[in-house]
Length: 295
Image 1 (tube, helix red, strand yellow):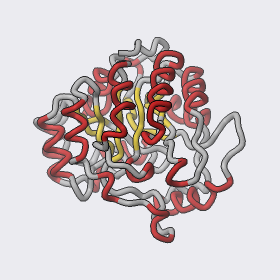
Image 2: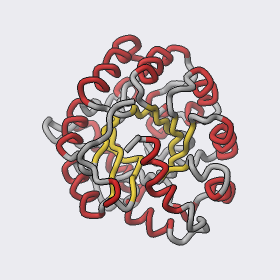
Image 3: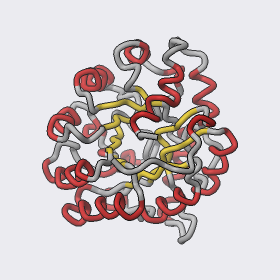
């Protein structure tokens, strides 16, 4: 497993947000094709922004609140036509803010052997801890064998994989939802991945609507599978998710906001109001992530 983040004072943090997005380049020109998409996302999630913050703004926001964050781009060039945000730049800026940021990367599985090479290099040379996949945006089934070379590289390097599951606000309200197909993000496909790569931690992102039962079943039975709670206000969590989080999955559920679509301020405020046991709250907010990331 990649080494610990040396400049992060975990005991001083109130939480670790396992799901934040790096959207805006800091050191290169932005993609004009992104404009309509980002405006639509801002409207759907009521963020009040036409454009998301860059990574340095994000670091300042999280540092002020004493919340650590896992941060990543999404490589969906092939399906969306939007230029991907450089994994190297994300890792470099995260390293400059390593008191608060933990870098993940994103590689379209369609890149094949080149993608596997990139994954190994990012872990070895840039300290990347994991990789974000968005099956709906990237247009692939997670258990497609063409992705297995990339997963093998991730497992070999001691990194982890985080997968979007369930519905997505990406392209909401746009014609044809911008080509986004829900079918790819059914968490049941991750059951194969968990079996075939048992030493690769897998995080299923979001309440997996409309497949919450499938996600809970997989996380309950596969020791390498976790759930992050990002993308939804906690007040909308289904009762079965809350029940499992309080009991058999209390060590496998992670706080995630989905910043900048949902702010930690909003998420944490709503989390205070739901029926999570007092002894489980610190596990979800920080301790489970601390253990998973070996911090």
